[in-house]
Amino acid sequence: MTPINAVIISEEKETFQILKKFEEENAMIMEIIGNADGIKHGMILIKERKPDLILLDIHLKDDLFFEMLEQLEFSIPKIVFISANKDYAVRAFKHDAVDFLLKPIDFNSIIMAIYKVIKRREMERSYQHQKINNLNISNTVNQKNDYVAVASLEKIELLPMSEIIFCKADGKYTVFILPNGTSIMSSRNLGEYSAILDDNYFFRIHHSYIINLRHIVKISKKDGYFCELSNGSVLPVAKRRQDDFNKFIKLKD
Image 1: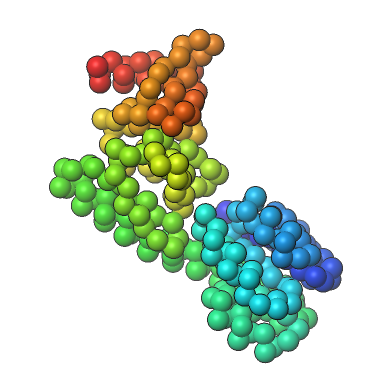
Image 2: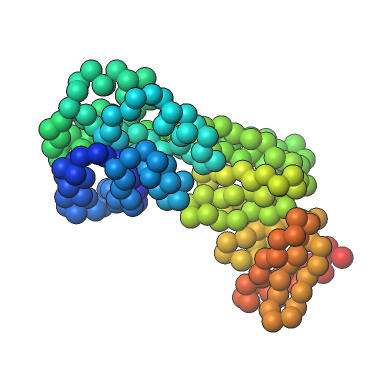
């Protein structure tokens, strides 16, 4: 099982110490990838690290933190609130918290919260993958192959394949780069899209990139293979994929 990646936002050193001790003894289910003692630093960490979970032990005067979460360009992390004030639980669940831990917290309550996070993520992914698979199967049956369903945990977007310049891996996510300068992040990995995208036009030139033939402007063979695309991006073709890429290009001539 892949451990849950967590960021801790806490004004209390004791909270961090307890959670750190828990991580050391339960590394199979949780990994702390950052900690902050305030919202400003916490948001920087969240944007940089893209955690699965936020362990939040801080007094919030307003809803600004949650408004900032809504503006993230990737799936909003799950939240577990921690507080000595039991009345704070109402606010926690108002903001769709997975769990609320009343201080003093112990390992048993933490492990129950982590398993609730794991269960919630599994249920959401299963639901989204079922919906996206149904859409992509329907597209194949109709023999159109003109769009791809791109799923995050919050929504599904239908992208015309002709408008996808390239896709790139971003850890466990995939980012779709479009002509208008926007990018869309999917909760599925790049390998899954290799099997979905129209193989008449899309080729995986590198373990991190799938490009759209319709957007290739120039191919450079100096000091290796590089593809220049319609948005100005220049991407490398992995050495072990160069022969297959040459065959792919010739087939499309």
